[in-house]
Amino acid sequence: MIVEHFTLQPGVSTPNNATLPVMLYRRVLDGVDDMADAFETAFRRQGWAGIWHNGIFDYHHYHSRAHEALGIARGHGRVMLGGPGGGECRVGAGDCLLLPAGTGHCRIASSADFPRCRGLSAGPACRHADASPHTGGA
Image 1 (tube, rainbow, N blue to C red):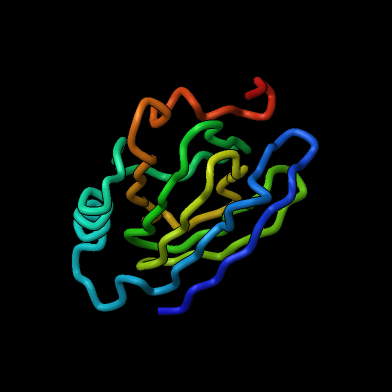
Image 2: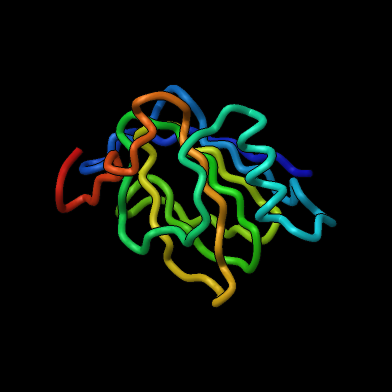
């Protein structure tokens, strides 16, 4: 497993999180047959709530009050982090992204088999309604 981390400064329309880093764990589930199930089990064991399986939205958004864990179960993709003009990140099967509350993210491109398992931090802040497109505000 390879671990990468970096912080994102506030953007024009994205708060990001200058205190807590984005964490990217590469090949955290290398060699696991059912990665979706393995991510879900790991997220539940660590207290993540709001777990669901789907893709990453193709528009810039952030979760104002919830941290987010994204486990890439299959395929590969490119994600922009930090809002419009942010940096691109390539992810693939077995990778896991931990995004602090406020971190802008958007799917730029992906393979056809690119689902992921998502968990939001536990508590009242984990509602999906916290997802804020840049056209709508926080």
